[in-house]
Structure formats: structure tokens, C-alpha cells
View 1 (cartoon, rainbow, N blue to C red):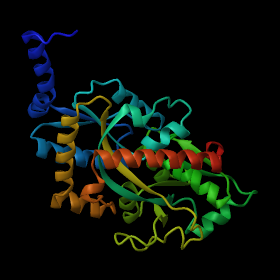
View 2: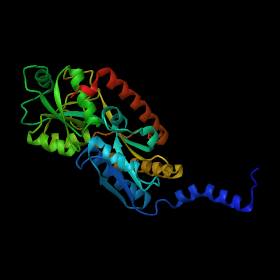
View 3: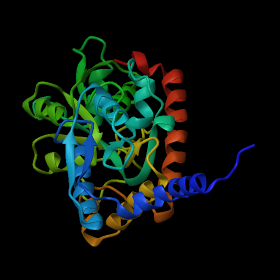
View 4: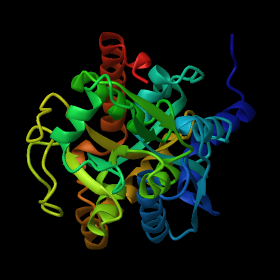
Length: 327
């Protein structure tokens, strides 16, 4: 029989009070947000916006650390090895649900090994081509990639298991066409090669694509969604261009390692939600054609549910469309 002695009682009380006390004192030092891609991509752009906004809400320094490679796997493995204390986080996107199904070395389960904090934004995807490619619109591109005698198109992505990898594999599948998917350490390096004409096209989020299109450094020829973007109404939808089957929007969010105390997760989630609701944050998202979810759809539980649903959806899609063999 277990005897409840004064010493044991005191110990149990101390343990029960430890988590609330930790959350109350949190954060007492700087926080690192891992962006598992090279600088210059959507995750980097939004991740830095989140870091700056969180720092204001929490009154503590928040530092972004780029750790790109392997479609985001290297950065996420780094997060897995970090202490679950709320001082090392990661800002990632739908690749959290994609990576285990499209990357041969991704041996982790995001639903078991991550603590979702909050969803920040959902972003449409844009197909952009090099100004040197000679491609003026989506119908012309579809005609070229369906021509078995033509040279295969090169499409750059931020690596196997990334959102761009999934999008480009889906694009080739629905277009019933062939092409070569070239992996990079992040969207930034892929876009550098796109602008120089080293590759023909990239499908990625509006956050990184719109500024380049508006500056005429690349040509955006199609956007996902049912309507054109207010920010760039000159870009037709995929449906207008003859490929209505292809439609994909990408969510972006903040996560911690599994085992992070729930009070810390809740504090981070509340601070993130408050940051999203500031006029400055909303204005920046609107400029990037990104949309913040409603308050009830952005917290830890909603994020965990979305991660589960999209993981199942991607798994089914990969198997039915044989996307692993798309490149």
C-alpha cells in the first residue's frame, strides 16, 4: 500500500505546479524558429513575419534559423532532436503532411512527433515560367509538355516531399504529360535558376511568386483557385487555361516538438493568434495573396485535425496517381 507521507505529498504538489509555473515564466530567453528551407521562399518570408510579430507579443527575441535540404526533412529532424521546452520551434507548411509520403528517407510521423501551435495562412499556388522559355500561357505549355518529341520540361522544386514537389507531380499527372522535377535546397535557389533560364518552370506559393511576376523577372501563367487574384488579375486560373482538375492551396503553420508542455503550447498559440489579428499582419498577408484562417480554425486542435486529414489525403493521392514516379 502506498502511504502518502508529507514528503511525498510535497513532491506531488511540486510536480503538479511545475507546468503552470513554467508557462507563467515562459519565455525567459530567446526563441529559435527553424525554417526548414533556404532563404527566399514562402516559409522563409512568412516565418520571418511570424518571428517579428511573436517577438512583439511575447516581449522576447525570436530568431529565424534556416536549415534547408531534403525537402524540409533536415530542418524537421533538427526540431525533433531539440528539447521540448518551447524555445525551439519550426515554421513549415503542408510539407509536414507530404514529406512522409513523398520522401524515401522521411521516417517520422508528424502526428506523433510534433505539437501543433497554430495555422498562420493558406496560400494559392502559381505556375511561373522563365522569360527565356518562350512559353506565353498555360495552353502553350500544355501543348509542349504533351509533345513526346519535344525536350522534357525542367520544373524546379524545394526537394522531394515539399509542397512544390507535390504540386508539380500533380500538375504533370493531371496534364497527362512528362517532365523532370529538379530538387533544390529551397524555393529561393530554384527561383534563382528560373530567372536565369536554367530551368523552365516552378509551381510555388503566391508569397514568393507574385513579387517576381509583378517585377517581370518571371512570367506567371496560372494560379490555383476558382477566381483570379485581386493582387494580379492578369494571371489566369488553371481552369481557364485548360486544366480544371489541378487545384491546390497550401497552409503554413508553427509547430513545436512533441512533449512540449501544453501550457507553453497554449501561450504560444494565443500569442500567434493575437499577432495574426494585428492590422500590420493582415495587410502583409493580403499583399501576398495569403489568407489567415478564422480564429476557431487556427489553434492547436484545428491544426492537428488538418494535419491528420491532409496526411491521409496525400497518402491516397500518392498511391492512386503514382506520384512517386512522376519525376
